[in-house]
Length: 314
Image (cartoon, rainbow, N blue to C red; front, top):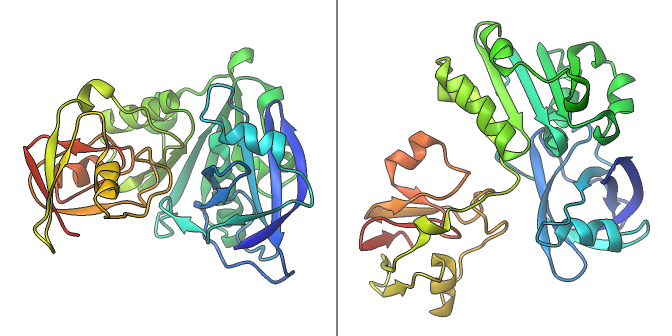
């Protein structure tokens, strides 16, 4: 879709928000809380950003971007090269982080820029009158995006802020131990924060169907990615070698077989492919542990093979 940047605003230290509207002034497609869009940035980069505004708003999408000097360039392109009035292309919204509206209570945990999908969830839950609590953890008050918006919202009483530099850090164990029965947990933020939350929840016996999470980026273990193997295309029988220095996506593309990708880090699920035979080596952050254990699908942008051959449903 073609959109226009109608507003760019500094939300906190190193965090900017961007309001996007339809180029022709028409309403934008509906999105559900937890959705993200692919944003085509200046310089040919494509990055995924969660929508953080109220899902009932059809006249705009709002995203927020944390400037990461050590990143792959997307955040710097957004901060330095995107300005009000600029036109750009985005995908329609996709949602891999949906609310479970059947839950009796929702527990929202946000770490840093992970607040973007969590804030959208809070907006939706408040509008529908559903029970929830939100904990928002940041390094400091000056790095807390949307703090004023939350303070003035109708759900402000359901939100607690936690700042690392003020000794008010979140007691993850206590919060999860005292959660109401049948609570569903939603968590997004830096990998260390998310791992701490999810590891604690699992240690306390939370079932996987009540754990909802979305990683912003992945760190693939390169030592686990060594070794070559082969993939076979089920429809044609063609067998393709995947060298140690090459991803499955790259090997397939070199042989004229294109699979749609987006993040290329095993985070978004765009390239999810069915596996008919063989054992994948799952290196993604998208599939749940149960889904990985089933070994009937994998993400070829980053995952590899434990067996000499994978037969793919392509």
